[in-house]
Amino acid sequence: MRSLCVQQPASQAGVRDACSQAAQFGQYDRDAEQHQVRGQELLLAGDETRAENEFRAAVAKGPKADKHVRSLGLFYIARGRYDEAIGVIREYVKLCGVTALGYELEAELLFHQKLYDPALEAVLGSLKLYNHSARMHQLLGLIYVVKRQDAAAALELRKAVELDPNHAQTRYFLGRVLYTTGAYAEARDQFLACLKFQPGYRKALENLGLCYEALQDYPNATQAYRDAIALEERQAGPKHAEPYAFYGAMLARSSESEKALSVLREAVTVSPRSFVANYHLGKLLLNLGRTEEAEKFLLAAADLAPKFSRTYYLLGNLRQKQNRRPEAERYFEMFKEFDRVPENRVFPLTDR
Image 1 (cartoon, one colour):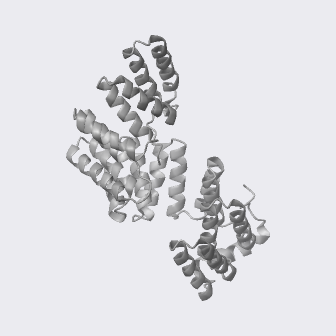
Image 2 (spheres, one colour):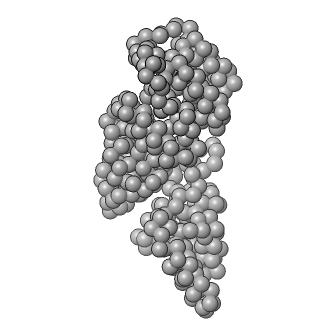
Image 3 (spheres, helix red, strand yellow):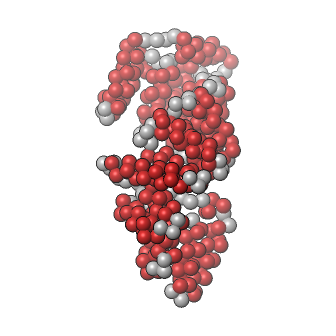
């Protein structure tokens, strides 16, 4: 993949400079712009075939224009049509040599393929040529998230927010990193900003509830969870169990067991293969002494997230209560084994 945007010989510097200037100041083609606009409209309407044709026509009219090349490249990347995306990038690189956009599209392609190390190199290459791209700082932050480098991720995502403060998704990602590092008040503010710019952002609402709960602001946590549940109930398609499960878990910790049971049962009904719903329902039933019913949900949780260590500790306790000591010991050993790895202690969200 590194061959997509290799450094060009010095003799091509003039071509590269011409492309950079064209992208910034000129090469405006009215026909190309019309194709671009129609392509975006058709894409929003769900007509991908005709949208692709319009994006291709825009690039044909303005092959050095960043906007048109970016739209066509991202169209192919988002749909996993990698060979066609590579073709777009290579044609652009032939015309323009080394540019921030060439590295940018390469980074998008590699990130989409989960090739994070080469994606990191490409992002850094793009930012070296143009350091004011909010998307590239966002993407760099996401790569650091994958690598569990939270401090570096927060730094890059803050830069992305500074460059594009109205971008809801960047606010969401920054909020998640801040929550992970225990900066709950800052995380809350990011989720609130996210919801200001995109009120129906489903994951932001439930994460806002988690922040309020961590700050011991239980009335606002309750409201956020209820709002998130109401949003799920209004969805026509598949529903997510997280807001139900997080709310139910908070109720259980508040000793509202019967209400918690009702909410957690609804969570499993909404999404039977949600780890978080099965785990919290199984845990609550175990605490209430309903071992046979708890067993069903804890085993389901272990199947859905087989490396999460805490589930095996609960299963060990369950087997002890059932006087099945050899199995209890086996589960406790599994807990110890998995718990040695820090990432196995991180609560997984599996129905996203």
